Image (cartoon, rainbow, N blue to C red; front, side):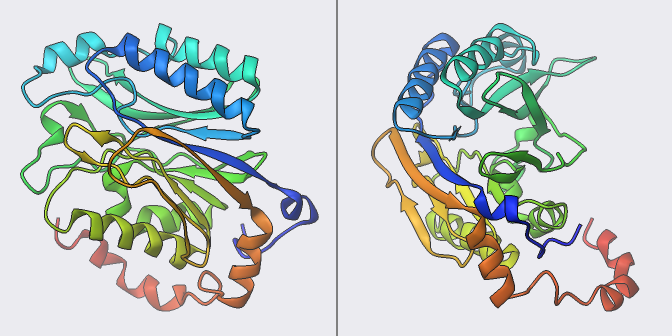
Length: 289
């Protein structure tokens, strides 16, 4: 697919995204109730899509055991997702939501993002492939890593690709999604507090938007150990929304695919790649492993 190409239909794709800054508790039931309320609110405000952060299902404190997290987790056809699907259908709002999904053959879980359309159908499933084993954390002690990139899917706002939190530190993933046709990247996150963490967060979200000429919608957890600052960035790197570090809430973002192709036309980074040169260095993909 030519990621710089546009069509008449793509030019018409635009609308409002409701980005949710969320403080998950350890109670799955409480978090579900709040999430359903936000979908209602997004519908009332005319959103085509609502995007929730990573770990919307529940906050997993450091001392929570692997078995306790597995017991809390569900399958994709479990009660948590079923309730969200029904609310998305009744409100006619596409929804990006995250869950702990039970893995098979053990007691660990996937960190999974789902795209549910306005008919309540699951359109895309993405299991986080880069686990946060860095800066003193070891997500792999509780979580399983996915091993597939979810191909972008068409939505009323354009073709949407999904990443999760720590994935944003790996530019290969966003580039692949853009080359597969993504015009909007949704990145549910739970960005941990720490020295320079806000600076890293803002810099990388803007970089992923600029280098791929796409929108970035990054809803983040707030409270507990997380920084908040849910952020939306346009294809030229302008910050459209930064929700700050203090409060939960919902913020509306205007998205228009015509902006993607305007920027990609003026700054054709995808077209100007030298894949003929890069191909000679494919062995370096294994370096540092």
